[in-house]
Structure formats: structure tokens, C-alpha cells
Length: 368
Image 1: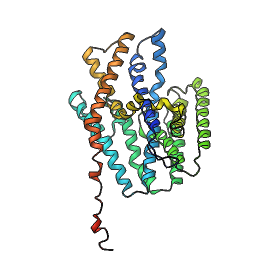
Image 2: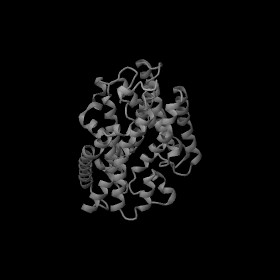
Image 3: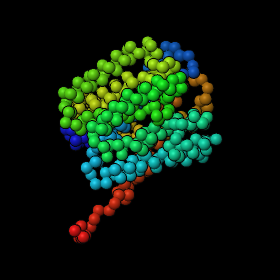
Image 4: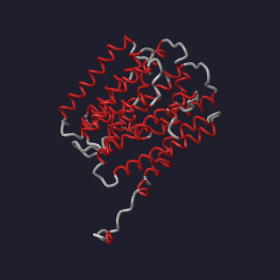
């Protein structure tokens, strides 16, 4: 990621933030999600409880995505063919692996045709509205992001930055209100209730590229975001903020995490190469971040395949649960490494073939 606030260098800490997000999601699915139908005591029960909040890793992805993509769009406004370059590079980054996953689902999962048809047009997240089984659940958040980025690039490219900020702020306010009005219906999967996480990231991208940005102000904003997250969580959790079975949780369950994750992303930029952010530069975390897209798309499919192979369908001991988690992690990493080398990187490196050719030097002044 590049910024024009204080540095044009790649911020390695943001790779670590992405790695943290994918590991949160994987650990949640391998432990708390898998253990939810059994009663656990002792250390196993503690692990089930501690890994339960890690489902919020998806919201970290949303904030980070809004920050990175909005930054790319803002930086590209002054470049020739900036908007076209954005769409070409995003399509080559997202589509090849995404549609390969849909092909695998089509061939290897029974009664998957309806879900694949929705997924083909990025509507996997509305499958519950039609009573269709969401075969590969992680596709829901890809749908949310793609719906957001159908319109957001045009907003950023053609409107003034101040207007972009106003629209992003409006999303941050209106989305919780929309979720409140929707209660008691579930709001988790549906794009029209989930754009605020992306909007928080967009606000951060606008801030660090503004004349208002200074390190001191950024630190004050980080502190305010973190304190607000803790206060909202501390007051709201006893009132039911931690679930969506009441109006408060439906409207604001994601809000403390969005504030905290916004502070984390801002800290990764402001304290780049600082000793305090060193864990975000760890090689394993950055590798997970680099592989996160494939890992996110396939990890539940890998889990299902291994469960079928080893017969891990019913209740499991904690030792088997831990072994299962290790195997799923290892297989997911291995497949993601292969995907990066043989599918994703070749596709991403081909983006120049889809851009207009530069004028030949000897013809540059013809017709002037």
C-alpha cells in the first residue's frame, strides 16, 4: 500500500493486518465455530470462548479493504486511465480464483447449481432470501465488497474528496440505523446493511491524504477510536450488544470492532517501522496476508473435504479438533501457495495487456 501523506513506501504492517484478519477467521472456524454444539469444560472450554470473538476478522477485512481501495482510487485520480486501471487490476486480482472456486463447487457439491448461479453474478450473500443453501459461506463477504465497489470507484473518481468524506460519514451513520429498522430480521449477510465497515476504511484513506493529517492528530484519533470502542463494548455488552437477538445488538454489534479496527489500521500506517508494530511485520503474518484471498475462499471447502475423508462429522474430542485445525490450516496454506504461483500472480501480472497502448514516440505529435 502506498500513501502520499508522509511516505510512498509500501507499508508492510498492513500486510500483517491482513494476515491477522485471515488468521482470526480461520481460528474462529476451526475452534469456536466447530465446537459450538458441544459442552466443553476446562482448557477446551476456555479456547472455545476465547476464539468466539474472532469471527469479527471479517469486519477487519472490510475496514482494511475500504482503506486500501479508496487509497488506490484517490491516488489514481491524477493518472491517465486511472479508473480503467483500477477495474482491470481488481478484476484480474479477484475473478480468476473466484470463478475457479465456483467451478469446483459446481462439480463436487450436490445440489449446488442454484448457489453457483447466484455466486456467478456475486449474489451469494442473498442465497438465504431464496431458501438456497450457502454452500461456501465465505463468498458472502466477497459479494458485499463487490456490490460496494460497483459504485464507490465512480464516487471517489468524479467527486471532490470532501464530498467523498461526507458520503462515507453518511454510510457510517445510516447503516446502523438501517439495521435497527430491520430488526428482528437478521442483517449479517446482506450488502445494504454492511457498507459501514468499508466506509470507515474509506474515511481513514481520505484523512491520511488530507492537509489535516499530522502524526499528532492521527494519534489523538487512534486514542479516541480505541476509547470509544471500549466504552461502547463495556456499556453495551451487558445490554445484549454481543448478539443480534435484540434491537441494540442488531444495530451496533459491529460498531465497537469497526472503531477498534480503524484505530489498528491507522496505527499500522502512522507507526510503520516502529518497534511497537514489529509483530505486524513478522514473516508468517505477512505471508498469511499475501495468501489471504485464496485462504479465505477455500478454507471451509478444505474443512469439508477433510471432514468427509476422515469421518469428522459428529462430536469430536478436543485433541481431534486441534488435529483437524492443524491439518486444515496446513492444506489451506499449501493450496494458497500453489494458487499464488500458478494462477493469481500470472493473472495479476497480465494487467498491462488490458490497458490502452502508449502512443508511439514518432507519432505523438501527429495532428497537433
